[in-house]
Amino acid sequence: MKRTLLTLLLSAAGAFAADMPVINDRLILDMPEGAQYGMRTTALMAADPGDDESLIWVGDGDDRIAVYVQELDRLADPDFDKQAREIFQNFNEGDLRFEVRKRSDDIYYAVRTSTPKEPTGADLFGSALIRHKDGSLIRVSILFARNQVKSPQKCREWVEKAIDGIRFGKGVRPSAARTDKFEGLEIPVPEGYVRTIEPGADFVCITYRQRKRVNEPASGFGIYLGHDPDVSPDPEARKVEETMVGQKVTWYCTEPRPGFFAAECLTKLDEVYMHVFLFAPTAEARDALIRQLSQIKRAQAAE
Image 1 (cartoon, one colour):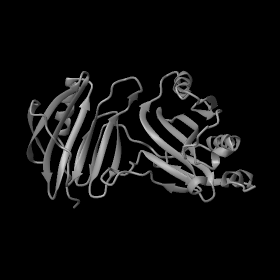
Image 2 (image 1 turned 135 degrees about the vertical axis):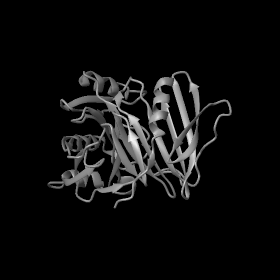
Image 3 (image 1 turned 90 degrees about the vertical axis):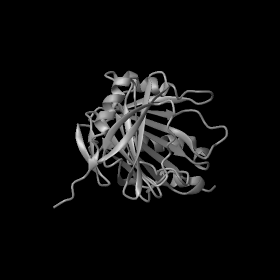
Image 4 (image 1 turned 180 degrees about the vertical axis):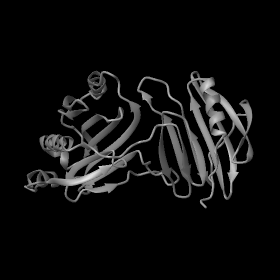
């Protein structure tokens, strides 16, 4: 009988021997030799995955294993044990069954105990919820291709070994009030916001999200720099005139749905458009962000 790549990896002595930093060295994963960093598929005109996520491939084709790591940009609840168990309980839908396990006070994980009846080519067999040292949440998902799920117990063993190899790195995700320099701009960032950079084929987008607990409303904003901004101001929007990067701009303020207040403006920055957009849970929070972001200016040239 042909042995799958998974069987070979599990039977090899010292198979998990490669330290692989992920999400800007916030975590380090212990992966098999030959594991490679990958990139999830995106549409042609969509942004590439941001620096708040990492993907590792092990093997190829129908023998592939994918390990996907993502910053959730949320803070853990005071009772992290309860929070993790409630989140993983939601994994049990239809024929799906997962068992929740605890590796440490900061790492909980779920292992799939049911066997896929019809493999999808990317079946989830393990997921970890991690409370980082700064209190933020990170998720690790482990998915197996078709040939792997023919040996479900081997998949579970692989998940256990991978979760056991997770440890914290030295990377820091800044959230203090600061001025970020990006693409020739100086961006005033309020306290509590974390940043994600999403490059595209001919544009770049930088987004900020207020890091709060899962059930708490949060604000966020972003800046698009490129040639084809997606802007269609609502003619009924309230208009706010401000100055940004030395130019007059008009903010278009809307409330697309109750409890969701948005605003956007568009200006030209040299050869590209600069589209600034934001959202907040209250009109007061939105207006405060408008005042803050209207202070965006060109960075001073280094002497």
